[in-house]
Image (cartoon, rainbow over all chains, first blue to last red; front, side):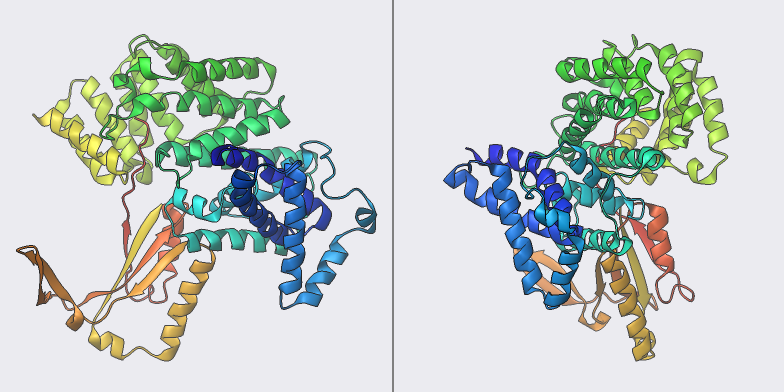
Length: 412
Length: 116
């Protein structure tokens, strides 16, 4: 079996192994280390020696052994052994072994909910989810976020300490809380996706493609919760956005705006899957922000040219999105849609209102949008000045380069 | 998002630093290294140790300098990685001497290819 197929299998088994350990021993922080070590051992041995008969059982056995070693070797050995004994209910000691077949996905799901606990900061939630559920190593996560491994290790270790201090037991949160926690989970997955969508293209083996990882995890969540419309909506949004990846950059890495993208290069299979998902989700349940954003992405993806885009429909969807989830960046997008339907002046009016907020007035996104609309309105000098200001305020190198080029184009 | 914080100073200032001041700075560093937000904190050697380096005929040519005309020069720099600028500004304001001297705060460029 090739190393990459082994890695795929390990990433799939990662949350199951950890869930089995946590179920049996509690002590998330210790179990997480132990299951990471078992995954690393497997990644080393399996490609050479072949798969064990029961890969999942193998991992759980090795991880349990590592856990015991770890507990014994700690200085506070006695205390910790007591902790484990206390954390393991007598029925568990007599009950099925940790590597018994899983009841269903509930354990892994509870684990994911735990990783997205509201007591953790968003960066910690992201790091912990990628390690515990995604099965990525600390080094891989650090590389993906462009920080030293020590910094990422600290983030993960602190998250685990917080979980320990909060006495989190990784059982499924009850009814009403469950809905809130699911929202947090979706937000974490979306953060991972955006990080991957915007940062490296994942061409290097050492830097995992986070957007692909986010899609994999969301797909997995969708299998566990097939009837949740927002989970479906998020998966659709990711697929529909990711489908444009091949057309988003020139070969030199510079950006291609939506209007200029070669739509032949969009991934039609992903668009078909995303469109079908959002079409199934929208009428089924309560409409949420991910479903609406997916619907907007679907309308863009269905248009064969920018001019043929169904802008009135996009505008209607942005109106609805702004109503249920108000956000200045949604308003920015709505201004563009409004300009496409009713002309640039209508869009510029919305931007003027938005610029009343001082922080928004200086934001490069607002300046870039205003530049675009001013150009459409036939005022190239003002548009150029806005593009220049936007370029000065952008912190993304490719984006700054693009904005500076636009400013230069209009002063020529 | 990554940010750079710069602290300026001069010999006179360093001479007046007490042990408890250093302890304060160490505590700050530890606090944010522990949260996984402070990537690194580096104090610079005195300006007397700074050099100017050029390449001449493919070889390094090193001279003394820079001869700074300002009264204060870079004393230390800190690299942050935070979820938002708001959070990074909060950390900057938590620097031990931020109530007396401003902390210079610079966002760092990144390679993210955002959607247009």
